[in-house]
Image (spheres, rainbow, N blue to C red):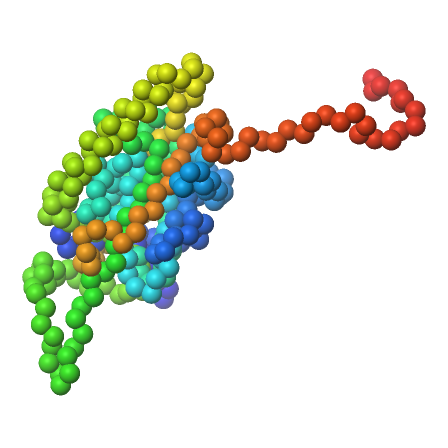
Length: 302
């Protein structure tokens, strides 16, 4: 019997979940490739590089999914943020929160906000005021997708002569979760104590982000009315219709508390990205005085 391809999540200090899915991402990274797919058209959105950052163009009203593909022969934990919100728990995102664990070389598509063990609310491109983040009072980070990747802690190998190498007891060791077949796929992790530990670090960066946001707003105030209107039309991610997406728990322990890799993708409408110079302006050919070599002037069409 064929096994379902699962992705797992974590809720709590030691538990993880899993979802079905498969994809081939296009934005290469060291540990996990990430791409965004427009589910309404099937198009894999092209990333545009601008000043060292990557941008994609979304279409209002279209559903999308975030495709992950592990490049490693080991399990990896991926903590996913959309518009500054954790897609699994709805918390303001921080690296030491819930995430999806990918099995070795596994691909997986995440299509929405996790609502239960069985379903998600679809990701949908929408105007910023209608985004989930804005509607929950957190509009400051709308327009960005982030993936924090963690490698798994290696269990000490057996020592020679059949003795076991000593290692400290962990929360997992004291409170083990049921083991799952590795072939079943990725996993999600949410660590409450780790999340609390990360709160201080999150607050320490908040002031810097707030200052940057205020600087951007000041620039918007000084812009022309047309430019300000464009900024007001920025895209966000809405809370769409629910769809079936089963999950399961599994165990995962990070090798360290800081991400081994962070992949960041910014997004907005195509018009806004063109206006900002991120997507090149469509080329318009200059008229030419001699486009053909006709000998005589033909009659005009009626």
